[in-house]
Length: 304
Ligand SMILES: Nc1ncnc2c1ncn2[C@@H]1O[C@H](COP(=O)(O)OP(=O)(O)OP(=O)(O)O)[C@@H](O)[C@H]1O
Ligand SMILES: [Mg+2]
Image (cartoon, rainbow, N blue to C red):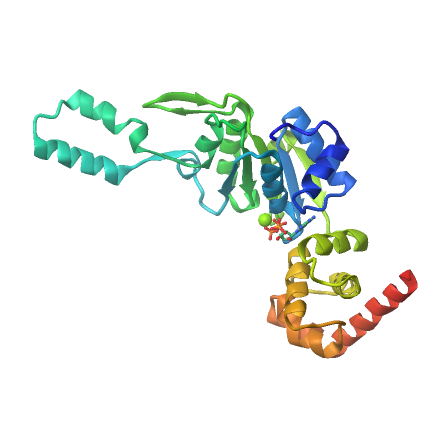
């Protein structure tokens, strides 16, 4: 456990072992990122398996997964460390109450590890018995440029300095996976440090494999209809196109309703598993769903 895979095939097999279906394209960049110790930058639409690959890698390698979920306004303090201010206050009060506190001793005690709150970047740089952790920096496009610049620095030397404690340097760099939904372009300087891969919607065959791995209770015949329908739907003009996550959810909804084959009625009843915007649902429900289903069935018939 814990060894970095030695080939592209090994990498793909390792991810398959975690029920993560990985094509050769993604397998190649993932292998290279591990081999060269470079961050893996994954961009793509929602629900195509960007976050999941970091989880699968961590589980397959037996490493800890440390997740830094990005959001607007995220700052360095919330990403690296903070001092536990309220615990420090209590310690000061206790020292005052018991009297005779040695000021210097109290000062150094207050800024010791006991009062440190570790945030994801600091955790990722500390030694881990099982080997360097997987650091998932999720949805980086949600942060702002100053945070990106800070991250660039943190990722280049894997060292953070806490003034009161000194520098902390990762004994071995963590395995870094960054994801973005591309709501804005991430700066070139950051991308340049990484290996980049656009995670696309899967092909018919690959999405079938994903359903087999994730919803094994669905028959191949039902899965084929689901995938063909979802793939037709992805060609429609929608506000929010369904990802793999939605295919999986929808398959589970259909199974729960004991569906054996798709029909316009069952599709209309369960569209909420696939589409999450009322405008999209109104556009597809009814005649358009029937047309897409016919199209999907025709494609399945010609594919044999
Ligand atoms: N290649 C795949 N193999 C197996 N499961 C997959 C694959 N791609 C996606 N999934 C499944 O789809 C779901 C969504 O994946 P994930 O959360 O990684 O998407 P995402 O790209 O991070 O989406 P978002 O941008 O919304 O965060 C997960 O539950 C995962 O199990
Ligand atoms: Mg995600």
